[in-house]
Image (cartoon, rainbow, N blue to C red; front, side):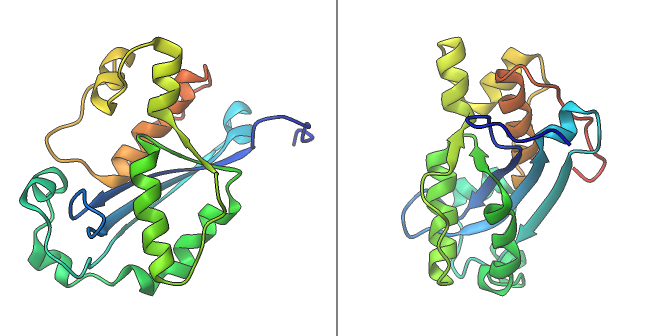
Length: 189
C-alpha cells in the first residue's frame, strides 16, 4: 500500500446516482446506486470496486416523466422498503469515502442529503464532486452523461436509466477525465 501524501487526492470514493419520483423538492429517491472505488487498488491493477443498488418505496407516486426514465411503476415501488429501513447501512459508504462523486452532483446530493435527513442522519458537508462539471472544465463543452459517453466513444444508454448503471458510467467519466485507468465492466451491472 502506498503511503498517504499531504494534498494527495483521496484514495477512496463513493460514486453515486439516484433515480427519483420527479424533480421537485417534494419528490423522493426510488433507487440509489453506489460504486465504492479504491483508487490505489485500481492503479495497482487489483479489484477496486464494490457495488450496491437499492430500490425504495418513496411513499408517493412518480411523475409520469420520471417513471418513463427509471421504468419503475408505482405498484412495484409500493412494495419496496422505505429508505429509512436501510439508512444506517446506506450511510457507511458515504462515511468511508474520501469524496463522493456524481454526474450533475447538485441534483444527487440534494436528494441523498434529503433522504438521510428524513432519517435523522447528516452527511458531512462539501464532500461531493461533479463529473459533469469536471468534464465541462476540461473539454469546454456541455456535459450531459449521454453526450460525455458519446465523446468517450462509449455506447449510449437506452431510454431507461438505472441508478447503478449510471453510477458506474459516472465513475468511468470521472476516471477518464482524470486520465486514470478504467476497471473492467462487472457482470452485476
